[in-house]
Amino acid sequence: MKTVVIGSGSWGTALAQVLVDNGQDCIIWGKNHEEVNEIQNEHTIKKFFPDVQLNPQLQATADLSVVKDADVVLLSVPSIAIEEVCQSILPYLTKKIIVVNTAKGFHPGNNDRMSNVIRDCIPSDKLSSVVSLIGPSHAEEVVLRMLTTICAVSLNEADAMTIQHLFSNNYFRVYRGNDELGSELGVAVKNAIALASGVLAGLGYGDNTKAALITRGLAEMIRFGTAMGGRQETFMGLTGIGDLVVTCTSVHSRNFQAGYQIGKADDAQVFWQNNTKTVEGVRTAKVLYELKEQHQIDMPIVDEIYKVLYEGKKPSVSARDLMLRELKAEL
Image (cartoon, rainbow, N blue to C red; front, top):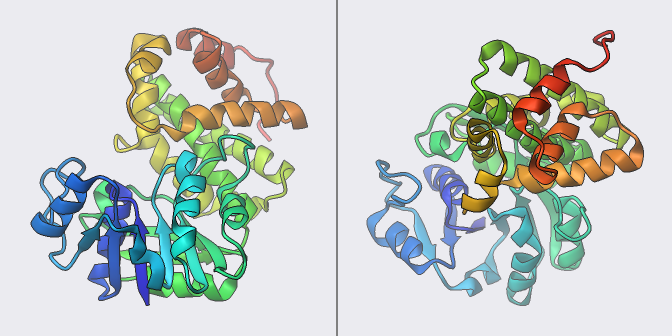
């Protein structure tokens, strides 16, 4: 099977290397010619992995027509770019493909989930199914072949199994899941909670606070996800608590880093004025706030991170207000 990875960033490159390590036919497409040439000729991508030598068999191109004979197209781009990328590859598709989605967020216009966005863009005569490859994983560790588990989530069991076998090896283990809605909501919610985790770390709080934030963040994830139609057990797996833990605790997480910057300054303006990276949790927090208001779901952490980001509330005041809410039973 031929796989084309769309996106020459850190995650696309790391996943492409997994496939090449597995002896699979894989090539990266990127629009940044410098990145493409570096991967193709130097077998490095120092912008993301300064000290890593990539598998020398890894190839890259800037020619989008490379997708025309692909069996699998993996999208490793931010959620805001999914629609544009799908529309760009559509003219080159000559047969049904499996689209592997790695984005964790919502459509920028209608707040839809990524799998639905892809199905809306690619007609059924060219799309076998969407498989979301999501879970607790950072590119910086996968590219070093550190032990990682992740989930291939799809409404199509056969295609999920295909992707599971395509990617699995002795350092990268893929499980299957079929709760597409719950899994996609879980990995999106955790981005907003990870922002809050970074904020608290930036304010100087320690492990007790982080444990409390993750635990209560999981409660909000379950409350929101089940209200929207996800299965509760999904949020106790890799696309729920697994992704939540890694994103709330790792310095590799852009959401954690952004939150840390905000907490350190005790003000979100420093983020808005200086950020140049895609931080999915920033927009996700807004979407979650709007949806939880619409459906009347209790999500106090999301409330506070929204107020910090969009209403100018001081993070230190938000932390205090979370602690001083009305006392109640845990469950």
